[in-house]
Amino acid sequence: MSRILIIEDRDSLREMLIKFLSAHEVLSAPSAEEAEPLLVHYPEIILCDLKLPGISGIDFIRKTAGDFPDTLFIMMTAFGDIPTAVEAMKAGAYEFLPKPLDLNHLSIVLKRAKEILRLRRIAASECDTVIVGESPAMMETLKLAAKVAPLNCSVLLSGESGTGKEVLSRWIHSHSRMRNNTFWALNCAAIPESLLESELFGHEPGAFTDATRLKKGYFELAEESTLFLDEIDKTSPAFQAKILRTVDTGEFYRLGSNKALKSNARLIFATNRNLEELASAENFRTDLFHRISAYTISIPPLRMRRKDIRLLADHFADKLGRQITGSSLALPKSSVQLLENYQWPGNVRELRNTIERWVILGIDGTFGPGRTTSQESGTYIDFEEKSHGEVLGELEEKLFRYQLKKHKGNKLAASQELAMNYKTLLSRLKKLGIQK
Image (cartoon, rainbow, N blue to C red; front, side):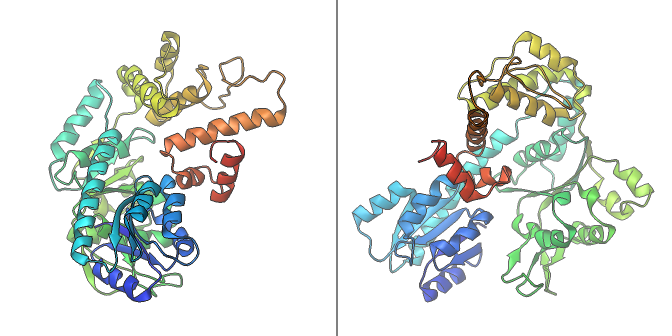
């Protein structure tokens, strides 16, 4: 199942396409302007008409494609000819479909598009599931993960914050029979509980005030795939009871519906606390704990795998250096020794963030709480004879370039991570000469 956005001003054709594509999660809009707010759902495929009221289809693709490199755009038009098709392809379209639409042809095009998306996911999965380490503690963890990966059972990952629970869950997924399908992840603590039930189970139109359309939840979206639920310990007992029913039977109900649905998603739970102690203290449902803890894998903190610090540092220096600056960062021996002597309370995440900062600002040998970076300690900004505004401008430019590289040019994703208005970011990029 794919997430498809249809942009078509003819109501009859739009409704026909919605019905034809009902096996997928479908979003729709009659114009490019009304489609823009729907882009926050990151559609995998966009079916866009050429002739639209306001912004044309080609202009919409030209404007949007750079921000959504993982989305495939398919142009539809009754006015097309070869030059128009070429123009659409140059704008970023994957395919060009003449009207009246041949639904059989559309099915073939969508099948090819989904195969391209599948191959992209495999490639991305291989990048995101690299487990670096050769310490005995990490080897034991991987040994357990390798045993459970091919099985279709729930798994509980336990470890301190920053140890890499999601990375290991992706590794398990990539070594399972579901490896060719999308990996789904949700942090239960990051969403208000009033919305969490809708995110996981979905809702029907009218289920609550803002429920204007059907929404499929993660249990439904993760069909034939893996669903990773992080910080399960942060949920309430009432919510845990609903999760327990789905874990036990695979059944769930969308909000506003009394029709039972089935999910065969492979569930991986994660926590950075001792669930057994929480259950004993009645701060976590005992029945759910016993149901999800049958196969538990503990991930060791970085201080218990010191042999891996150098390997991880070199891995991040190479990967992040190439992503951000185009070349690998060489770590001096003295810097590696500093890394190996530090306790890393934030574990692998803190180590990665330290290397990331070194790549951007230079190796300064400082990390931990209250860390600072100055001109003397290696920042690649010359403060000499520069105004306050000039220095801030250079720092802002470095930050924006870094975020754009991190998100592969996706400006919407960069603006969200920066907690910055999208249009404001575009304006700043233009002013700094990063984007015309």
